[in-house]
Length: 575
Figure (spheres, rainbow, N blue to C red):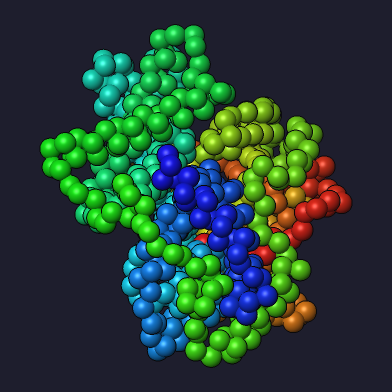
């Protein structure tokens, strides 16, 4: 423990000796200013998603590792190469400019980590940067995945975890049926939610085991082994977690699928996974003794005199053309401040404005040729892929029936293709939005702003889903673009749009709506007909969907309200 006490003493000592009038610190400040907007978007995004909420601990771990190795970093300093410095700075300026213009927390965080690495390199050269690699590795572990790839990963892990849980239940002799990520027992059905998929444990446990290995100064290949074995324990642990939920709920009256019991089970699963990973690591140490690389502060503390960062030798930050880079960073910072004055980052889900719940009277008793009969409110867990609250109207037209629902609430557009894929359907997605996804030739007044899912199952069932997202004023929120869907065109138009907004001009209309006011409510129409899906049925469904959407927009839920402390969301975060 004395060793770790030295870390905090070094941190406080170094900070107390810093002179904030130092021009080198001014350079760091201007660099951070240039990253202001993207870092703000980064923090909002990371905190709004539960599987990234461990990132403050990872930041603390990176600071810990820096001060744990500060002596080695600064006493092994070598002269930096000016050409390498200039090249790194050019890359950083390019990345942070792009991240600011297209509002990408993914590119912005990579740029920030590279800025930290370049700053260290300018202070202590290549050898010192090599000694500080553990800090950069931990920072890299909390980089958000781009282009909704984390949602794809969540769905795949839900499938894998539910499949393994089904195998565990088969082994235990529990009669059940698996449908997508849903396990159906004799008495109940259980959805493998986002938390149950293991995505939280995957990111947090991997970061924790890597931090442990870096703290113990393991070789790179041993850290790699620890990462792989931790991923294996994550899969096993969360499969057991899902199986336990099904077993307990099916055999007893005690509920572990909701409330504090579910959260406690999740925390217990995480510590079980991390404990198993550490145990496997100890097993490797017993059978394959491995010496840690470098003595560092182990045993006897190195007797070296470390100067403050503002000193003459340590932290010199000899950056070629530093004044010019400061001017460039300053201009980017002013652009970021300008965009931030007109917009703010996506708010965390816990701070979303509470809107009035829909009522049965929000929809008339007859829509087009359809009669509106039943109405119900379904409340689910917060992480349910179908939404926490669903308000459902049943529509009848002769022998045909459909369900019209409002599902809430989301911080952005919610793509229902993930939901129906998780529920066991094969899904073909078609986003029909004016100016997006190849619909540039649509007529100005055409009502094409919606998404369509074509559902199918191997058993022969077919279905159609029409849906859209409405913000709190009833404005349509367009879907996030993914990689491969005119990505480069969208990036170009988004850059132009941001520059127009910064100059006080109106945004373009040909790209995803630049602003919206969360929370977002999903309006969807679901029809699983007995007969074939023909053109007439499609036209009928579109007609009733548009009519219902117009009625919903006039309901009390979407009545304009005064927005206290809630501004417009800036563009689309490409992550």
